[in-house]
Image 1: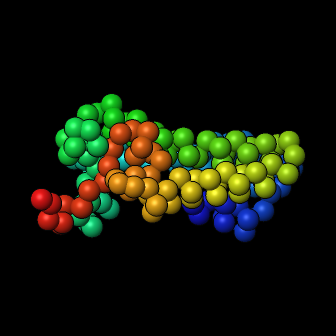
Image 2: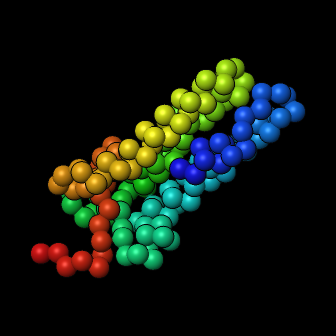
Image 3: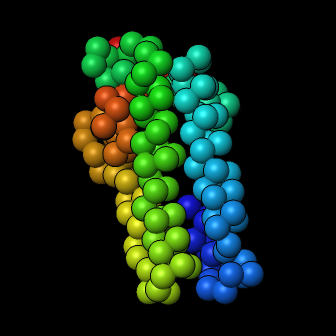
Length: 149
């Protein structure tokens, strides 16, 4: 979510020798989307939680059947939506904004707002408080510290 803020501070330069050359765009996509995808997919497939979730006592499980551990395919699917899927729109409009027409940068910020809404969805979602990527993957994040009846 910090990427649009960083872009706003750096600016967009459409010249070939500018800040946003094609190799820089690809490297940024790999660092911002692909590496976090691999990290999350491996962590969820092996342990059902990332290091951050482990620190705060959270775990990702299947919604149906409730509480079952994630199969590898579900862990990869959830991580793909969460990291690659959300970033594709942002990077598509960044690429178009840098290479074609600067107006597309505005649409990149609209896509970033959509990503924020996908995460914020869990605030008002009932009864499982799922974000969009959890809904599509059929998962739910549970608190291991809570007492469940």
